[in-house]
Length: 276
Length: 276
Image (cartoon, rainbow over all chains, first blue to last red; front, top):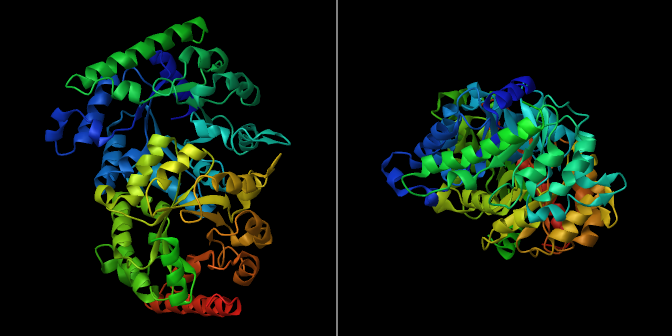
C-alpha cells in the first residue's frame, strides 16, 4: 500500500488508528480454548470486530515467536486474514548487516518465499544505512525506523547529545537521505508528546507510528496537537487497551467499543484540522 | 552454560571458534535436495563435521525466517541437534519495550514454551535498559549486546561523539551496570580491530563476540592482539568461510578443513598467550 492509498483509507474511515495484535496465550478468553488455535481465533474475531474502524494492524512478532512453531504459523495466518485494504505492519524491530537484512525483508515482504507480505516492518537503526536499505529495495514496501521510543529506556541512548543534535534527531535526519516519506516512517512514542513539535521540524512529511497511547499513558490529543500534518501523518497504535478491553465472552464487542471511541475522537480531530 | 563452563570448553577444545549457521537455500549442495528438509540436513552435517572444533554455534534467525514456517521449524530442529556442551547463540538482534522483550526471551530461552533454549541471544541496544533486562532475568542465560558492528553502517550512529564518548562506548559503559560479565557479552566486529584496545579498557572482563573474520575481511591475529583476556574473552565467528567452503558433495569435509585451520591458529594463539 502506497502513501496515497494509506491517506485515502484514513479519509474514508475517518480514522488513523493502528491496532496492535499482541496476544498472550494466558490472556485469551477461556471460551476460545476449545478451538484448535485459540490465539488465531482471538485475532480473527478482533479483526472482524474492528476492521472498519482502523487503517492498520500491527502484530508484534515477539508474541508469536514466544509460542514456538505454532506461534509462527499463527503470525502467518493472522497476516493472511487481514483485509487487503488495511495497512499491515510487522512490528519486528529487526536490523542486521546487509545480506542478513535482505533475508529479513524476504521473511516479511515476500509472500511467495515466506507466506507473509506485510506492507511495512519496524527496524532498529543502530547498525546504520546498509542494515536498512535492503528493506527499502522492496518497491511499495515501508521501513518504520525506531526514532524515539515510548519506553523509559529511551533516556539511555536515544536522547544522547551529539555534535549534531540528539541521537534520535540524527537518526531521523540521516535516514531521511536513504528514502523519502513514501517508504519511510518513524516510531515516536506518545509518552514524549513534547518532542513532536521538534520532530515535525526535521520530518514534516513523514508518517509517524505512535505507540504508547493507552496502557503506557500517552495522550492522543497531545500527540495530534503537534504531530498532524496535511496528509494526517500519524498512525496511532493501541494494543492492550483494545484487545484486552474484556477477557470474557464479550471481548470482541468490547474491543470494538474501545476502537470506536478512538475512531470517533480521531474523526473530530481530522475535522477540526480540516484534513477531512 | 555459565562463564566457567564456557572457558572450560575453550581450554578443552583449544578453540574459541563460533560457527555461524546461516544457510541460504540457493547455496545448499544439490545432492541434499532429495531430503525432506535439505537445510536441516545441511546444518546437521556441518555440525557433525565441526562440533569438536568449535565452542559455539550461532544460527542467524533471519535466514530461517526467510523460509517461512518451514524455516522456523528448521531453526528449532537445528538448536535441538547441537550438542549440549556447545554454547548456542540465537543471532536475532532483538530488543523492544519490557513486556515485549520478555516475550522474545521466552521465544529463545524457554524450551518448554517455544521449543528452543539457547544459551544466548544478540540484542540491539537502541531502546535502552528496560529492553535488555527481561533477557537478563533468565538465570544462566546471556545477552550479547551490539556495540560496534562489522558493517559499513557502524559509521552512521555507533561512532557518534557524545559528551561522554562515542555512542558504542556509552553502550558498553552504561549496559555494564545492568549485569556483569557472567551474563553480558558484546558484539564487536573484526573489521575495526583498531578499536579493541579501547574496548578492553572499558570492558576488560567481558566476552566479545567477533563477527567479520573471513568473508567480511577482518584478521584473527589483529583481533587477538588487543582482544584476548585471561579467560580468552573472545568468541570469533565465521559463517560463510566455513559453511560454504564447498558447494559440492564434499561440503562437510571442506567445512571441517576450514574450521580446523582456524582452530589450529587459535590453539597457537592460546598457547602463546599462556591461556592454555
